[in-house]
Length: 550
Image 1 (cartoon, rainbow, N blue to C red):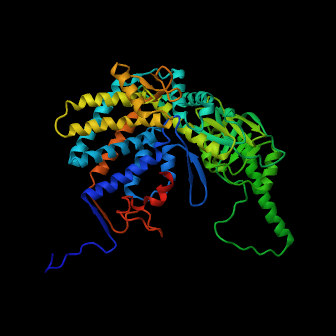
Image 2 (spheres, rainbow, N blue to C red):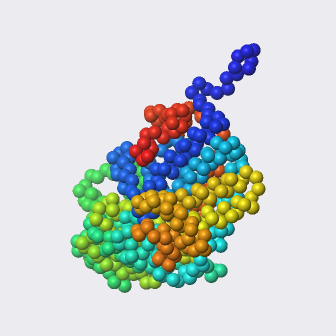
Image 3 (tube, rainbow, N blue to C red):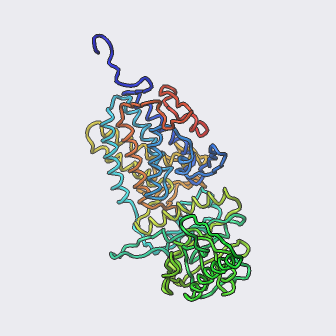
């Protein structure tokens, strides 16, 4: 106060939400995000149809894709989306689990706050529970032989079940395991390292998913530049060229005065000679195939065809970089300095039906997974599911630990955390117990999404684990409680560790906020649309983006 007048330190457009209101606002926003993806969890999870402002349609049940495609306009909600993105980057799968647990943690934290337990005590308790959960996961996890292909196929199938890949999951799992095996190398310490950079994924429509294939090499989705060129080349020397086979142009604008038709012909002859010299350089190198990233002049195409050289133009940069590993070639940027050592070696075969080339090299480290589906939507969802499966199989090969799925690990962790809570003093004990309750959201939601009674399922699971069956999980297809490790429902331990850690850290980050100060409305989109006020259901600017998902 200054002479009886309030001191104004913020602009008229600014907004401020404090204390309990700020906590309610943040928790509501975070829980709304978690609720939006919860119904996609598990083999019986439902899909979401997302339509963007341009009318493009995405149909998926992949958690991170849903959250990225949704038009979310709220700073707290975006913090929860980062949980999914981190989970995707670090583990490749488990995004829906991580976000759902984060939402449940905040729901249970809200109940504790209502009991006058300070957020600081809750944060400390959640952190303690998270650390203990990681230790317990390591204790429960089973060390596996990474050469066990049956187990790796089970990991891949578990990841793909419930996604668009489920119908042909056995066939795809075989391709995925073989692809991972092809790109796995040992480091200096003898550990397995999976180099996914050498694994390329291509998609095609108009085929069934069962026709998907794995190629020891790459694909070039281009046609030969001339009809008289060969369409196949076995045991070929391959030139990867990042230079146009065209007439060289000057760097500056020039004008040439021609006084005699013979002078014009001289210019044309000189251009023709330039192109002929470039083609001769390629032929002298011994190249049988030219894959060019830039353009190829019509006259040069003619000369290449006369030399019997197969040429492709406007190849993608990413394709050339991948093929350089497949055929062990250097990408040439200057024909004049190229040598025979820059050439790669391999076979090219033409698929006339799909109008593409298959490029295979000897002992190629790079492989291509060719995914086929009936429509673009099917292929897109197939690619998302296969990418997740590739990541979890790669994690299993690198980490060497797996856990029983079907909610088994969550129920066992909850039981052990409740025992651990007895040794925790102070109010943090209640937070540890709340953390344990939050983990049991996973088997509850698995049961709900399968049309089963979630309470009966949880009671049966707890009873099985109390009797010492650590790997007892839910079979969502039969509703039975069984040893999911034996039935092939297995998950990588690293993904579960990451999910628990990310969820706890995100929940703690939200709980630690007690004051929200915004220069304008509490939305992150500063376009024409006005974000809702904090009082409007505590959701800020999330109304438009989230409405269709609740």
